[in-house]
Image 1 (cartoon, rainbow, N blue to C red):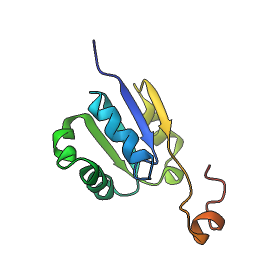
Image 2: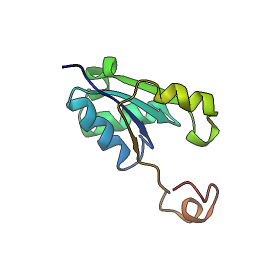
Image 3: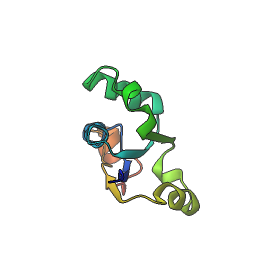
Image 4: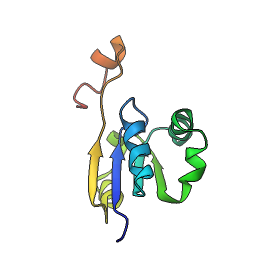
Amino acid sequence: STATTTLVVGATGATGKHVVLQLLQQKQNVRAIARSKERLLNSLDEIVPKSSEDFAKSLEVTEASILDLSDEELQKATKDCDAVVSCLGHNMTFKGMYGHPRRLV
């Protein structure tokens, strides 16, 4: 059987990092859109040490804010994906709840 490919948006958040790691542990290919690739890799390593190294071949990270991507860039990110998981949400701060972008979720 061939591995599936899943796009995860909101990959550095409280839920997203766990989703990414679980997909990788299930031998799936993961594409992630994250504002900081370094933050994503560090958060994976905090959960399971060296996981960013162990799964490097199966993880592709696009460093961007999802709101800044063009339609063409989103089409490219989803091309050949079997699933898309949205873990987008607000930070639990005043700015996160009431600042921009308010219509994120």
